[in-house]
Length: 456
Image (cartoon, rainbow, N blue to C red; front, side, top):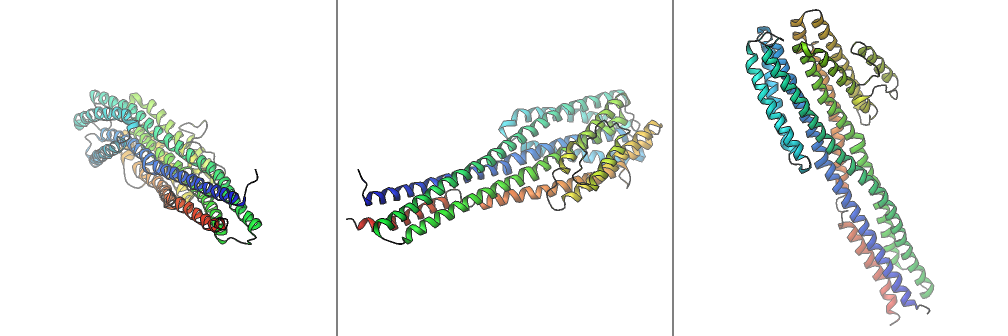
């Protein structure tokens, strides 16, 4: 049976409206998903990762300060250093408590958090005994019972830090999965939006062509406007999806990957600094702590085959090669990750300052070990805990400040990318798609209804 003109008009009009509604539903749902993904990344996963890495840092520095207390002992010349170590220990304990409170809000890690709480509680009990019993011991040479308690505390902290690292990994995996899902979703959605948008435009054009042929009308303004609205809405939607994908890449790949690597580097740096103090305070485990220091150094800025004695020359050579050619990154580890992911204004200069400050701190470590090997334990301790310019703790503080400046650059970029990505979606999670669909439907009715009336 041959279709009549009214049947064709009704069919094309209904198909156009239906296609416009489908387009609106697809855009609204995908933008809602992207916005939810941004919330997961920006408001849940990223803060939890940051809290976990900060907890690792705080706990590591607590143990470093405990070792520094033992290094100072009852030596009057080191009394100020002992007081400073005790003050920092208390500060890090409060910081760790705050981080634990934040992490505890995540139901998926509550079992691990309870384990960390138990470990920290036991550690603080042991640490309190160490501090109380060490008040009359010689600098760097605690009594056997104090040293035994200190070993128990340090070993317990190793186990606790391992659990904290698992919490970091769990939340980072969630962030990676959410990011990949959102990026893949925007790519798939763009294809569907183009296909559905093109189909809607095609139906609207077909309706106009049919009216022109059957009714000898050269132009239908309402259908023309509906076509332009649909085309504009499709192009805008596809462009916005591309922008959101770009913002997700900036936030996660360019910024947060560096934040995680550098935050972990900062936490491990404090743990390595603690190994340096443990090396002096516990001769029975000196070799173990020296190996641990080197392993953590390699995790920060890895050099294949480097030993404690050859590391400085290797680092200097690798860093000079990088400065001459920024694509020549010979370092592995967290610093290698960062040097391969320089993105934002000022980031390269800040990263290079960090590596230079790290070099100075590493050279200080060799001096500490040389003084101790030469039998000058007091000189090694004074240089290790000293905060005057050129002393180890002063150089470590300078290195830490440089490292934190690179983290801050990436953190600002991350916050801006998440904020911009969320801001661009205002109105696009259903409101604008629904209005566009209603507008197209209204224009289709306005364009076709008068023509249908001619057949009544």
